Length: 343
Image 1 (tube, one colour):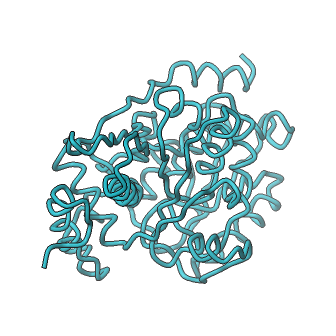
Image 2 (cartoon, one colour):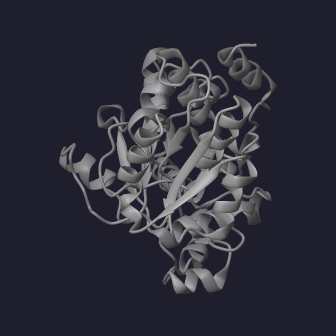
């Protein structure tokens, strides 16, 4: 098979994400659904994005036989790209900050990738571009290119979600912006009345940038929620497709991922928690307004990846993150449709 046929065959083998229900009070008339993207072979939503990036690179001629593929991240995107590079018999290098957690380095290596560690952390982008240039390779640059690649894919998350449910709201986080853009475009392609909300963590540029209309807005501060939030408005983010941006405290993101596990038994990471907390806000608003309908969001990755970080109380304390008050607000939310904790 040629490389594109290999990618198509892998997509056909991939498990179909299941749509889970999160229980809300029946009298609200509001249902909450989560599409489980953690079922992919590399355990996250970034699996779709990586497949789309490689397919786009092959179709445009940027990726050829023997091309060294380089990415500037040590997160789920690098893991998924390492998987597809190995599937296609290509060398893959993740340029990562020197202080990256050993677990992140091992995950990339477990899929056949190499880790090139640099310091200071924000040099990873220039280092990745230079590393690729020096070796005649290609810097995939998922932050800049993922939205374009995903929009050209036949299997993006917008189709996967909206084939299963037609909600009043879809709520997602934004990292590169590819997921929100794919979903927003699919909503409009289908002519749906569904609205798109972004749940945004602390320090991210998306909420203030969207609210102010400044496409070049930057905070200069990194997000503490892995996978989403950016210190600048990324080119893959399309504000015109977004109906609402909801700022979410980082501690609330952790609280929501814990509530998800306690209520449903489903394990997910903190970016899922951010979107879930945003969905709670919308459910409460719909309840107060007497509106009925569905809300949908995503399980972005497997919570087992975070046992030593967001699921570890000592690690959270070191990061000054205390989810307890937000967890305490959840029972109050079910009784009153208010997310603030009781006095």
